[in-house]
Amino acid sequence: MSADHADHPSAIEQRTIAQVPLEERHGRVRDLFTIWFGSNVMLLTIVTGALATSVYGLNLFWSAVAILIGNLFGAVFMALHSAQGPRLGVPQMIQSRGQFGAYGAIVVVAVVIIMYLGFIASNAVLGGQSINELFSGVSVNVGIIIVSLIGLVICIYGHDMIHAVNRYATPLCGAVLVLAVVAVFIKGTPHGTFSHGGWSGSGFVATIAVAVLWQIAYAPYVSDYSRYLYEDISARDTFLASYWGCVLGSALPMIFGALLGAMAPDSGQITEMHSAAGAVGWLVVLVLGVGIVNTNAINIYGGVLGTITFGQTFKAEWIPRGAMRAALAVVFAVIAAVMAIAGKDNFVTNYTNFIFLLLYLLIPWTAINLVDFYLIKHGHYDVPSFFRADGGIYGRFNTPACIVYLIGVAVQVPFISTEMFTGPVAKSLSDVDLSWLVGLAVVCPLYYWAAKRYLSRQNVPAVSGREEISVADLGV
Image 1 (cartoon, rainbow, N blue to C red):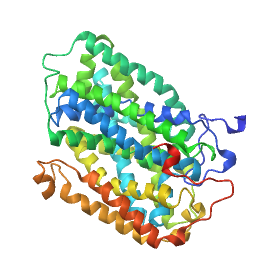
Image 2 (cartoon, one colour; image 1 turned 120 degrees about the horizontal axis):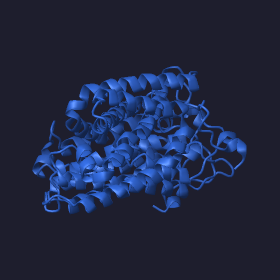
Image 3 (cartoon, rainbow, N blue to C red; image 1 turned 90 degrees about the vertical axis):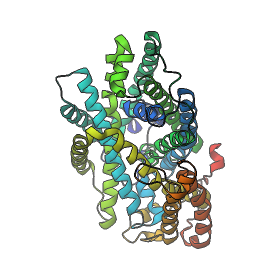
């Protein structure tokens, strides 16, 4: 790699949503492993895993099985999106215009912006609580502000800084997670830890769904961090690095969270983690709790790219640079911090409802995007059309994709099972939520049929020397 193509984490990134030119491509495939491992070994992942034992009533064995199934399955979708980045060189939400059209993609972009705000706020609450746990003189609200500010600084530097932080975070967080588990068993688990809970069909499926969503929720992120890689990098290598980074980085702390939930179902995970790890509890909370700033930087960065994508829809010539990205990052961080402070007292309830809402809205989008990329267009898109006011060959609205998306959301409704709403089919299945599975099963073949029948005008001739990309190329 030449010096011109090396990472420059100390320089503020100037690119936002524009396609990354070939001469600016740089980076290593292994960085995709570290960014998805390092950013997932954090407190929010642990809290998510704890839902299995503390909310859904599973014992530790069935919790671990459900967590593994959900992560192994869900990460397939996340990693398939990652392989799109080097080919197109644009953020994920811009690429969605290739399926939905310039205006048709707005709904999905808006959903993703809300998703980013929700995750930033959730992380900030946990980071603030971690600081308060370590330093009782610092209030949770002040801790939220501290976490938000540190994440904001990392985000302002941008893509290369975020990758650099995760190269260091991966071995550090991995080692501390192992240390935490060892410390828990050295100190000894409370009586009843391994007999807590049991088997519940609805709880098992809900835990799988949470893990699947955890992975699919990363789908709007992943091309943002692979788009600078060289265009000719193997799609299979990109897929595998992202897949295993996210599976291992998510499943291991989730299982640890399930253990903490079984140890103390009625206690907060931060306090329990601090206490259970004994003499090294402070280090565990510091790295896995306060270290959440790294993940918040990723969320702020993605939220800003989504916001720019939303605005550029209505002003095609607006392709801002680093200064505007930094200004929007400040606004984004402030809004999320206010949300975190306002919602911190009902965190678990708000978070659980939030992640299931995302599941229902993201499932049809990810299915349409991946079917289109791998089975319809095989990686061949007219990237300049993404930035045209009229949507170029993709138009302002891709009617078939928009209709299939709405159908995909609608068919899930009877199968939904949440505190706010339970559909008739879910009630008949003892509150087992199969909506995400139904959504995938309906949308994938339906969109494939609709695209083959109605979207032939979008076919882009293959570029000489550029191979087609299909799922078979990835070894999936």
